[in-house]
Length: 149
Image (tube, rainbow, N blue to C red; front, side, top):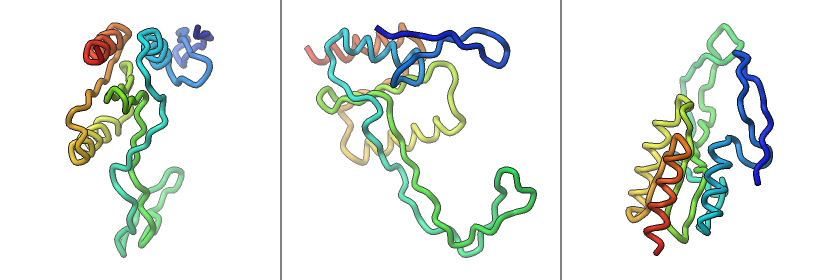
């Protein structure tokens, strides 16, 4: 059973915050629902490299937080782009990324890159889900459970 603490956000509204390994109440709900359905999964264990790191251009200046001037980043390593899905099952060939209604700015682009990565790596028979609420989590798990039978 998952325990939740009540936490107030910046606007003073109370918001449920799960304890333990899950980052959101929707993730905790999804894990609990997958376990109740006896569906094997791993939580945030798989990382996918969507773009390898590389050396930047010979002449490259950029703005950085808390600095007013441009900073010389010439010939520096540009970090790789990695995606870590919430729930993965290689046994049942699915990925669930719980997002709720708040999404980071870079997620839509990262998700598109990930889907392309999957196609390029013959994961065409996998199922991908981005549920935003509990009923969508339930629907995703029903689709997965029906495919397993």
